[in-house]
Structures are given as C-alpha cells and as structure tokens.
Image 1 (cartoon, one colour):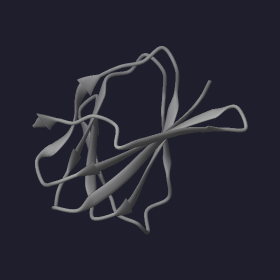
Image 2 (spheres, rainbow, N blue to C red):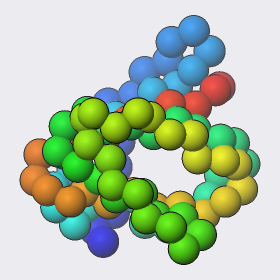
Image 3 (cartoon, rainbow, N blue to C red):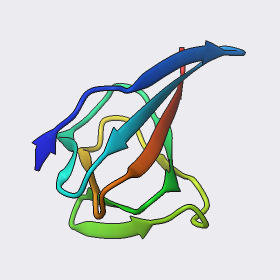
Length: 89
C-alpha cells in the first residue's frame, strides 16, 4: 500500500475531520491511536483491515468506529476514492 497524507482537515464542534483523496492501492498503512475515531467512505470504496478482519466500505456503508489502541489500516480499492476519519480533539 502507498501511504497518503490528509487532503483536507478541519475542526468543528470539538471534532477533527480528516478527509483523504486516494487512488487504488493508496491509503493509511497499519497503525494505531490512543483515541477512537469514526471512518466513512464518501465515494469509491475502501477496505478497512484490523485484527484479522476486513470490511469493505462504499458511500452507502454506515460509518464505523475504530476503537482506540487497536491496529487498523485503510486502503482505497478504486481510483477517485474519498474517505474521512473523525475524532474528538
């Protein structure tokens, strides 16, 4: 997987929103955080991998919460994918 950086970031009502634009094979390689965050896909598709599980997200998939201190990774499955991570400040 090719690591990408944040495309847009903004703060709103005590939360930080990180928006990523990715092409197939790009994303956020395995990592963890001391905080939980919500992940959603706005266009295209992503696969979220964690602890031996894989879940594919599209724009119709309900956002999911990734718990604190558990490794995970997010990879775009197609060009033009947009996904978002939201966490408390």
